[in-house]
Length: 100
Image 1 (cartoon, one colour):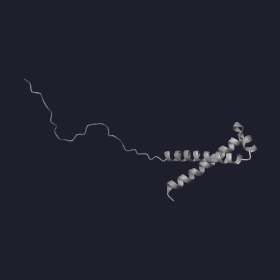
Image 2 (cartoon, helix red, strand yellow; image 1 turned 90 degrees about the vertical axis):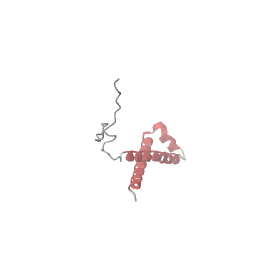
Image 3 (cartoon, one colour; image 1 turned 180 degrees about the vertical axis):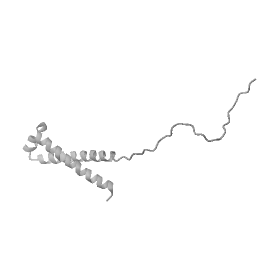
Image 4 (cartoon, one colour; image 1 turned 30 degrees about the vertical axis):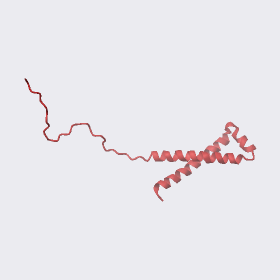
């Protein structure tokens, strides 16, 4: 399996684990009376599933982007030169105005 695919799968799993922890924290702290709304509804499990899946997609994408951005390779070679003239050893023609 290519390295990038392994990195992607690993970060998707991390993102969904973070999503599970986030949804559990939301329900445990009862933000916006969410626990009451879910526990008293017969279709509350769909709300929990949707929270988990959509947050998992977002967290997995952010996690993968974070890891990809940190995979930079340092290139310490100088760029653009030093803006100093290069001596070639060839004579240059210079126009001189004649004195009258």
